[in-house]
Length: 493
Image 1 (cartoon, one colour):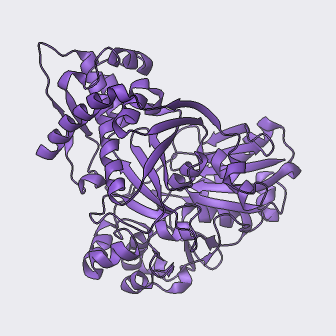
Image 2 (tube, helix red, strand yellow):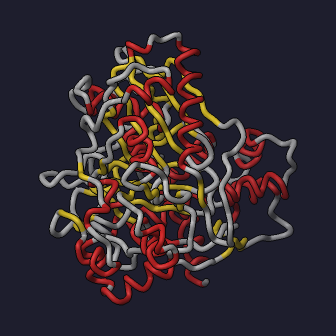
């Protein structure tokens, strides 16, 4: 028996088939093989055709079924992870009315800022836990004002994952987690954010019915089954945005646990057990996958634009393309903790939300031409990235969150021993590295949704833990001293 998981990204769609009994992925595939097109009609705009996601999903499904040799009758449930904050509009016949406005489209920023100002910052933060910002509700406000002929035809709005679920089942549902990421959920009244709906002039009928994150959310139709080579009637039993789903994939469900990624940009996603927010709105807070009215589980999301991109810049400019990252890590290890006094601020990839949307830029401090080498610079770059993570984690602690353990996939910056040891050392937390990804997590979420797994402990009992990194007490003072210098540099800016 198998579980099928999909991860609907803006670059590709990935499918994974997971064996129910072993918990292992037996086959995976992604399409397209080159990065998917993002339509940019104007600066700051980013759109994709939802039909493209479906076409790539169809190709990925065929590939995993062929690779695995699994019979279509053996697929027990389907789970979906998806790129967050997008807007898909369909008419009463479930036809797409315009290309999806995706997560990295910034056209709605003025609409969210106006709502934040006119409704009041305290009102928005206490009820939505965020500024309306550039999220789905504000994107719909843009459509309403700029494309009224499209807006008038809308029967339902949805997130990218909800569109895929609709294509699979013919039914349109949303979740509390989905509504919260679009700024449609009021955490004070535990219901639809009527005050924001009224401000934007949205009809309640545009919002799909709500279903639990882990539940049967429709069954695969005969038409979808024919297109995908699957059996009719398979339940779709889980869906979540990519960051909450990444946390699920890493078995992060409870307060004190953090899921982290560190690719081009970096994410720290922690679980809070109380309704709270950052008064300066430097982080985003959404309902986590296991949030209910009875059990508060909020995902606090910190995104840092300048992380792995600094390391890749060092590779291209300070080193050379021929030098591997492993070789760079070896050179960096020759420098001491604190990089001999060099501090690098890694914020060279645009404005940073945790810095109150300021564009601080990347800067290098403390270089001594008679002392420092490339080894010092390479280590300082990795330490600077880690210190940005530490800065964001401290914001989370200021919200009352405990931070006890960091879960991460064994990929990108987490492949570097220096990165891992510095993060453990400066935060004082244990880091656990796992072998997993979003599509595998979505498959296991579907297993929870249909009751194959009775709880998360059972679903993730076979999750491969590759390594555990514990902070070294002997290095603590050196890390604290290095972070203090880095923080002084940031404060001076």
